Image (cartoon, rainbow, N blue to C red; front, side, top):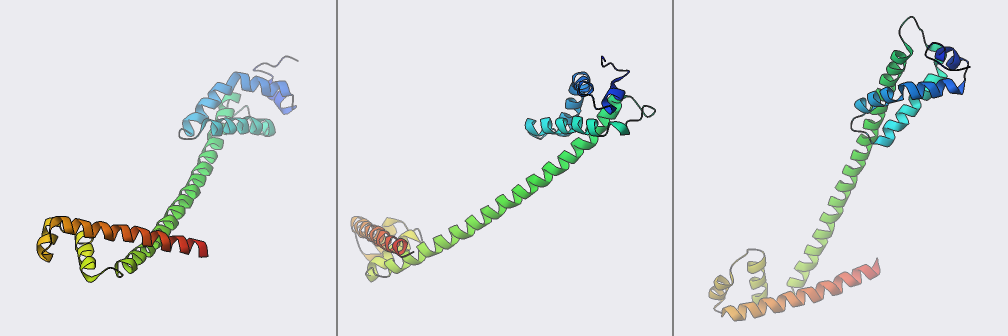
Amino acid sequence: MVITGENVVLALQAKRPEALEYLINQYGQSVYSLARTILRSAASEDVEECVSDIFAAAWQKSKEYDGQKGTIKTWLLMLTKYRALDYRRKLSTQSAYLASDEQLTTSLQAVEDEVLQRERLQLTLAVVETFSELDQKLFFRRYFLQEALDELAAAFDLTKRAVENRLWRCRKELRDQLAEKEGSSCGSS
């Protein structure tokens, strides 16, 4: 039996595979275009999956087709509309879950970063407290209060070069101490 527009419905209801092939060949482009329009932001794989489901639904629901209500093309396009809308809802729900997972991961990372930053600040302060009183003052005023080297030199009756040398030694000591303390805390974890 050759499948035509007149006998496709009967062949489809009789579960003849060539009837489904006829539908795909005849209306596949229209179904795909409508699904693509409804799923405009979806990946092409999702649209193709939706189109496959539409033709599978047409195969399974062929007995529900009523020729009095419209043509086979109209029926297929109505199946397409509702199936594509279902897909769009499903995909938006999935992306909402993915977005909330990403937000949670970002929030957890921010908390972890803040905790690590506080620990590093505490280590820094502990090391700075081991400096001489003059070096502590220079360090805090330069790196926390952002005072210029000229101002510090004048305030402590030192040369600019002497302030630079003291701060360089403080930074070196801080780097060495932090490396040692962070290394020992990593080893004990």
